[in-house]
Image (tube, rainbow over all chains, first blue to last red; front, side, top):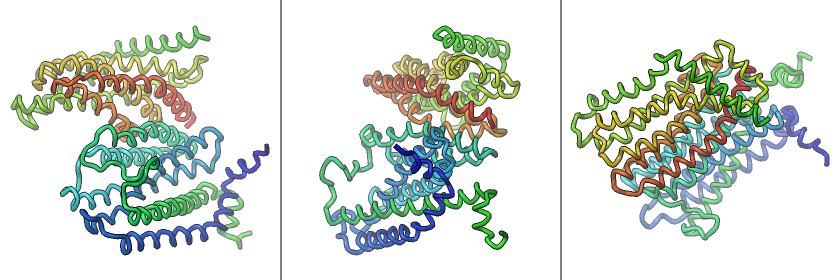
Length: 248
Length: 227
C-alpha cells in the first residue's frame, strides 16, 4: 500500500494550496446551513410548553457544547499524530484548535448561564455538568498558556501535545459526570441509542444547527491553521513567493 | 533487564530521600504551610466549632492540595539547575522508573507527612470523630495521586523561568476528580454512609496515575531537556 497520500497530508504547503481551493465552498455551505438552522430554530419551530421562547437558546447552547467537547478530542488527536508521526502540520492544527475550542466552551457556559436565569432562577449553579465545562475551559487555557510559554516552537508543540493527551483523561469524567451526580441539570436530551426525548419539530432544527456548527468549526480551524502555516513557514520560498510575488 | 529497571527506581528514591533529609528545612515547609493556613480559616470565617465542623473536610483537602502544588514545583527544578537531570536522561534505565522513584520520594516527604499531620488539623477545625479514619485513608491515597499528576506538570514546566505559576494552571484542572472523591470519602463517613465506594474510586484514580503519569512525565522531560 502506498503511503504517499499520508505524507502529502503532512505537507503544510499542500494543505495551504488545497484549502485555498476548497475553503470558499465549505464556508458557503456552513453559512447556508447555519442560517437555515437559525431561522428554523428561532422562528419556525414551536415554542416549548413550559419554557416558552426562552428554550430557543438551545440551538446555540447545545451545538457549542458538542463542539467544545469534540474540539478537545480533535486537539488531542492532532497532538498525538504530531508526537507519533512527527508531522509539522498536525501541531499547527493542534495549536489552532485550542483557542477555537476555548471560545466555544466559553459560549456554551455563557449561553447556559443566560438560559439558567429564566429556567432555574439563577445564572450559576455548581452542577456537575456546568462544573465540568468550566474545568474543560481551564484545560484549554492550560494548553494555550503552555504553548505561549515556550520560545522554541518544537518544544511548545510537543509539550502542548502531552498536556492535551493527559487532559483527555478528564473528558470521560465529564461525560460520566451526568450519571454520577444527577443534580439540577437535565439529563442528556439527545441519546444515540434511543429516540430523542424532544419533539421532532424542535429536534430537527437542532440537528441542522449541530451539523452547521461542525462545518463552522472546520472553517474556523482551517482558517486558523492557514495563518499558523504562514507564520511558521514564513522563511520558506513558497510563502515568500505567495506574499511578495514581484520580488522574484 | 529486570534488575536494572528496579535499580533505577530504588537508586533515585534513595538519592531524593537523602537530599530531602539534608535539606530538612526546605522539606518541612509544605507541612508548615499546611498547618499555618489552617489558622487562617477560623480567623477568616468563624471560630464557631459547629460551623467549622461542616467545612473541615473540604478545607483540609484544599489545603493539602495547595501544599502539594507548592512543593511539586521543585520536583525536577533543582536537578535541572545543577545538571543532574541530564544525567537522569542519559541513564541506561527505562526513564519512567527513575521518575517514579523521584515521585515516590516526593510523596514520602510531603504527602505522607501531610496525611499524618491531618488529625491535628481535624482537632483544630473540630472535624467529627467518625471522619478521622476516612480522612487518613483518603489523604494517603489522594496525595499520592496529586504527586503523580503534579510530576507531569512539573516536567512540562521545568525549563521555564516562571514555571511555578504555569504549573498550577496546568495541574489544578487535573486535580479536581481527586478532591471530589477525597472530600466525598470524609463527608460520607460523617453522614453515616458507607465511605468505601468513594475511597475505591480514589484507589482507581491512584492505579491509573501510577500507570500513566511516570510515562507522561518521562516524555515531557525528554522534550523540555531538548529545549
